[in-house]
Image (cartoon, rainbow, N blue to C red; front, side):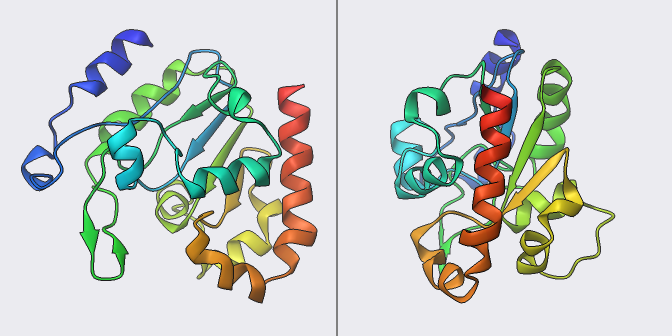
Length: 191
């Protein structure tokens, strides 16, 4: 696993598309990881720090999971494998989508080495569309509302960005039904 992560850290697959901010893959994992978090791509804060989910979205995600930073960053517990490993840059209404080169190139190799995984969190539409290819549920909201359909392998979630507070306010069931189930499942796996 260390050899593979070292190889990923030197990845230049999409360097020609990341000229403004450069290449800085942000991914963590361990052969013993029990949970994998698959989100979209690092934001600019994470790109600068090199620490995954080192921003407000990460604070929200840890709160949703009901875990402390120490557990979150313990790679024997949790692997963080985004769809795109590098910051894709800024678009008109937020960050650009994750680059499409990372997941097909690196995910199969990483997942093959993590044999103790009990749950994969699919955060946001990019991760869900990639991993739930035979699922014809039209919207992220429908997927999250029907999260039980994807268990025990996957737990589908919206992105924990503060920009999604409006979505959460419109979908109260997320806080009352989905988050307690997520916390319970995480607790069972990590205990």
